[in-house]
Image (cartoon, rainbow, N blue to C red; front, side, top):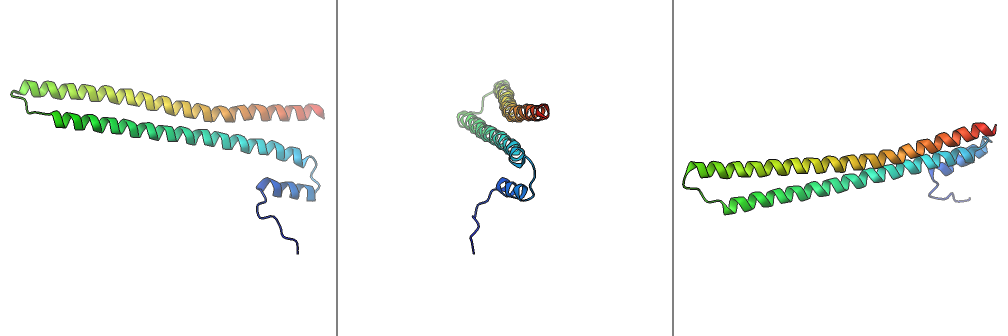
Amino acid sequence: MAKQPDSDSFLDMFSRFGRDLKVPNVEAILAHHRKNLEALERSTRAGAAGATSLLSRQREMLQDTLREVSDMAQSYKAPGNPQELMTKQAEFARKSFEAALKNAGEVAELVKKSGTESVEILRSRIKEAMEEIRSGYEKK
Protein backbone atom coordinates (compact mmCIF):
# COMPACT_ATOMS: atom_id res chain seq x y z
CA MET A 1 0.00 0.00 0.00
CA ALA A 2 1.45 3.35 -1.07
CA LYS A 3 1.83 5.89 1.68
CA GLN A 4 0.27 9.32 1.06
CA PRO A 5 2.44 12.35 1.82
CA ASP A 6 1.73 13.69 5.30
CA SER A 7 1.70 17.34 4.34
CA ASP A 8 -0.57 17.89 1.36
CA SER A 9 -1.45 21.54 1.25
CA PHE A 10 -5.02 22.67 0.86
CA LEU A 11 -4.27 23.96 -2.65
CA ASP A 12 -2.52 20.71 -3.62
CA MET A 13 -5.61 18.76 -2.66
CA PHE A 14 -7.82 21.07 -4.76
CA SER A 15 -5.38 20.80 -7.66
CA ARG A 16 -5.57 17.01 -7.59
CA PHE A 17 -9.34 17.16 -7.21
CA GLY A 18 -9.64 19.54 -10.19
CA ARG A 19 -7.41 17.39 -12.37
CA ASP A 20 -9.37 14.28 -11.39
CA LEU A 21 -12.61 16.03 -12.43
CA LYS A 22 -10.90 17.43 -15.54
CA VAL A 23 -11.75 21.02 -14.61
CA PRO A 24 -10.32 23.27 -17.34
CA ASN A 25 -7.60 25.72 -16.27
CA VAL A 26 -7.56 24.36 -12.71
CA GLU A 27 -3.90 25.34 -12.28
CA ALA A 28 -4.58 28.92 -13.40
CA ILE A 29 -7.54 29.15 -11.02
CA LEU A 30 -5.46 27.82 -8.15
CA ALA A 31 -2.55 30.12 -8.99
CA HIS A 32 -4.96 33.05 -8.80
CA HIS A 33 -6.25 31.94 -5.39
CA ARG A 34 -2.73 31.14 -4.18
CA LYS A 35 -1.83 34.78 -4.82
CA ASN A 36 -4.94 35.85 -2.91
CA LEU A 37 -3.97 33.71 0.07
CA GLU A 38 -0.38 34.99 -0.04
CA ALA A 39 -1.63 38.59 -0.04
CA LEU A 40 -3.92 37.81 2.87
CA GLU A 41 -1.00 36.28 4.76
CA ARG A 42 1.21 39.33 4.09
CA SER A 43 -1.60 41.61 5.21
CA THR A 44 -2.11 39.62 8.39
CA ARG A 45 1.62 39.65 9.13
CA ALA A 46 1.73 43.42 8.63
CA GLY A 47 -1.22 43.84 10.99
CA ALA A 48 0.38 41.57 13.58
CA ALA A 49 3.68 43.44 13.34
CA GLY A 50 1.80 46.70 13.82
CA ALA A 51 -0.03 45.33 16.84
CA THR A 52 3.25 44.12 18.33
CA SER A 53 4.93 47.50 17.89
CA LEU A 54 1.84 49.24 19.29
CA LEU A 55 1.79 47.05 22.39
CA SER A 56 5.52 47.50 22.85
CA ARG A 57 5.22 51.28 22.60
CA GLN A 58 2.27 51.35 25.00
CA ARG A 59 4.30 49.32 27.49
CA GLU A 60 7.15 51.86 27.19
CA MET A 61 4.69 54.72 27.71
CA LEU A 62 3.29 53.08 30.83
CA GLN A 63 6.78 52.48 32.20
CA ASP A 64 7.70 56.14 31.58
CA THR A 65 4.53 57.31 33.31
CA LEU A 66 5.08 55.06 36.31
CA ARG A 67 8.70 56.25 36.54
CA GLU A 68 7.57 59.89 36.52
CA VAL A 69 4.93 59.27 39.20
CA SER A 70 7.47 57.39 41.28
CA ASP A 71 10.04 60.19 40.92
CA MET A 72 7.44 62.77 41.88
CA ALA A 73 6.32 60.74 44.90
CA GLN A 74 9.91 60.28 46.09
CA SER A 75 10.75 63.95 45.73
CA TYR A 76 7.50 65.07 47.29
CA LYS A 77 7.75 67.16 50.42
CA ALA A 78 4.68 68.64 51.98
CA PRO A 79 4.87 72.34 51.18
CA GLY A 80 4.44 74.85 53.93
CA ASN A 81 1.45 76.61 52.42
CA PRO A 82 -1.60 75.52 50.42
CA GLN A 83 -0.68 77.70 47.43
CA GLU A 84 2.58 75.79 46.88
CA LEU A 85 0.69 72.51 47.10
CA MET A 86 -1.85 73.69 44.51
CA THR A 87 0.98 74.87 42.23
CA LYS A 88 2.75 71.50 42.42
CA GLN A 89 -0.47 69.60 41.80
CA ALA A 90 -1.38 71.83 38.87
CA GLU A 91 2.09 71.37 37.36
CA PHE A 92 1.84 67.60 37.70
CA ALA A 93 -1.64 67.60 36.17
CA ARG A 94 -0.43 69.73 33.25
CA LYS A 95 2.54 67.46 32.58
CA SER A 96 0.33 64.36 32.81
CA PHE A 97 -2.21 65.85 30.41
CA GLU A 98 0.48 66.84 27.89
CA ALA A 99 2.05 63.38 28.07
CA ALA A 100 -1.35 61.72 27.61
CA LEU A 101 -2.07 63.85 24.52
CA LYS A 102 1.35 63.14 23.05
CA ASN A 103 1.01 59.41 23.72
CA ALA A 104 -2.51 59.27 22.30
CA GLY A 105 -1.31 60.97 19.11
CA GLU A 106 1.57 58.54 18.80
CA VAL A 107 -0.68 55.53 19.37
CA ALA A 108 -3.15 56.82 16.78
CA GLU A 109 -0.32 57.23 14.27
CA LEU A 110 0.93 53.68 14.90
CA VAL A 111 -2.58 52.27 14.44
CA LYS A 112 -3.08 54.26 11.25
CA LYS A 113 0.27 53.16 9.81
CA SER A 114 -0.36 49.51 10.62
CA GLY A 115 -3.88 49.55 9.21
CA THR A 116 -2.84 51.41 6.08
CA GLU A 117 -0.03 48.98 5.35
CA SER A 118 -2.28 45.97 5.85
CA VAL A 119 -5.09 47.37 3.69
CA GLU A 120 -2.67 48.50 0.99
CA ILE A 121 -1.42 44.93 0.55
CA LEU A 122 -4.98 43.73 -0.01
CA ARG A 123 -5.86 46.68 -2.25
CA SER A 124 -2.86 45.93 -4.42
CA ARG A 125 -3.86 42.28 -4.73
CA ILE A 126 -7.42 43.23 -5.65
CA LYS A 127 -6.11 45.43 -8.47
CA GLU A 128 -3.85 42.61 -9.64
CA ALA A 129 -6.72 40.12 -9.52
CA MET A 130 -8.97 42.41 -11.53
CA GLU A 131 -6.25 42.74 -14.17
CA GLU A 132 -5.85 38.95 -14.27
CA ILE A 133 -9.59 38.50 -14.72
CA ARG A 134 -9.77 41.26 -17.35
CA SER A 135 -6.89 39.79 -19.34
CA GLY A 136 -8.50 36.33 -19.09
CA TYR A 137 -11.67 37.65 -20.70
CA GLU A 138 -9.74 39.54 -23.40
CA LYS A 139 -8.02 36.29 -24.46
CA LYS A 140 -11.38 34.60 -25.14
